Amino acid sequence: MTTRASERRPVWGLAAFIVAAIALVVVTLHMSGTFAEPKKSAATTIGEIAAEIRASAKRAPSEGPSPAPEVASRTWTTERIMLFAGPVLAGVAAVLGAIGLFLREAPMLPGIAIAMGSTAFLMQFLFWLALVIGGICLLVTIIRNMDAIFGS
Image (tube, rainbow, N blue to C red):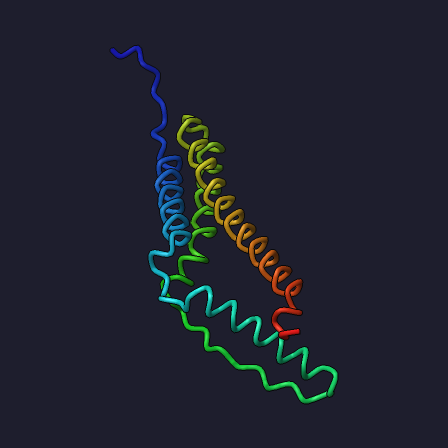
């Protein structure tokens, strides 16, 4: 005769924990650029942005026609799949953890899974927020130095 109370095995909590761990790995790999395709150097990109701003500014007073925008083909690369998979897996982990808590499993594992899923989602959001802020700072710097770009 056992004196230990029978507890439910944390099936939903364990599933949520595993999915949350995968979400954290996916978000971390995406942010590290492991699967990113090689890009042009930062100096080349900044120079192209400055050249486009200069050409647009020169064209504006003469009312010249704008060039047709280039259509970029969007294929499903590994990097793009990871961009969407991270938040989706984080949301799935949070839902599975909530199901585990609702079914009265031991609250430790579902709670950790919900926290890890939320962390994965927040980590990716803050990463993109930092990139946007950095891009805005770069554009402000280029616009402030327009006189040097025009050569006057």
